[in-house]
Image (cartoon, rainbow, N blue to C red):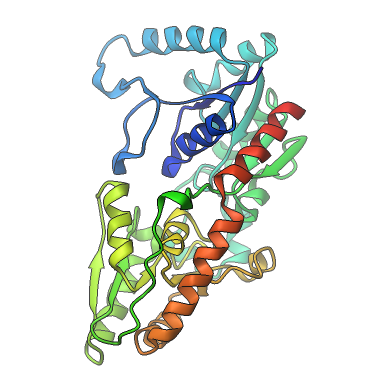
Length: 335
C-alpha cells in the first residue's frame, strides 16, 4: 500500500496539489512543510519552524522519526529533505524507503547551461552558485535514483546525474476554477501582472511598457504582489489580459492559473523549448516585443476571447489533476 509524503517545500502549492490529487485516487498522501510561506498555499501539516528559536533540530529529528515510521514513499521538493544538509537520505536509503526528488527551477538553474540559450539571462541573472548547485545535485543523486521536473527547461539542469528523470506537469485543479472569458469590449480592459520576484519576471520592463501604452490607449493596470493565492485568482477572473514572466524562458503557475480562468497570457518561451509545447496558446512575449503584443490584445477583444478559451482547454487537457495523479502513482509503483 502506497503511503506518500510530499515535503518539505510547497512550491506554488504543488506539494499540496500532488497530495490532494493522490488522495482523490485512493492513495494515502500528506503534504508537509516546515514553515508557512507567503501566498497562503494549502498544506496538511506545518512544523512552523520559524516560531521556534530553540529546539528546532529536536523538532526536525522527531518529525523525521515519525515520518520514517509512517510513510514508504518520500517525494521531496526543491532539493530539500527532512533533515538539514539532506542528512536523512542515507538513513532513508538504509531503511529501504522509496524516494524521488522534485526540482522546480530556481533550485537547480545553472548559468553555464541557461546563458547560451537565453539572450535575456544577463538581465535577471542567477544568484545561485553553480558549484554548490552541482555538488548538491550529485549528493542527492547518490541516494535517489529518480528526479522529477515540471518541464524541459528544468530537465537539462539535472540531466546526467540521475538514472531516471520524469517530467510531471504542474497541477491546476480546473474543476475549481470558473471560466471567465475576456471581455468582448474594447472599453477599459484590465491588464494584470503578478510577480513573485520582480527581477526574474521582468517587472521593470512591463511597468515601462504600460506607461507608454497608457499615453495612447485607455485601459486599467493592476500589479498584484503579496496577496494570498485565492485573492490572486479572483483578480485573474476579473482581468482581460495577464502578463507572466518575460525573461526566464518558460511558463509557470501564474500562466496556467490565468489560462484556466480563460485569459490570454503573455510569457516568454525560449526558442529551444517551444518545440516541446507547440500547441500552447501563450503569446510568446519578451521585453523586445511586449509593446506590440499588448497593443494587439488591447485593440482586439475578440482575439483575447479566442486565445483565452484555447488556454482553458489546454490546461484542462495537460494539467489535469486526475491525469497527473495517475502518472505519479505509476512512478511510485515502478520505483
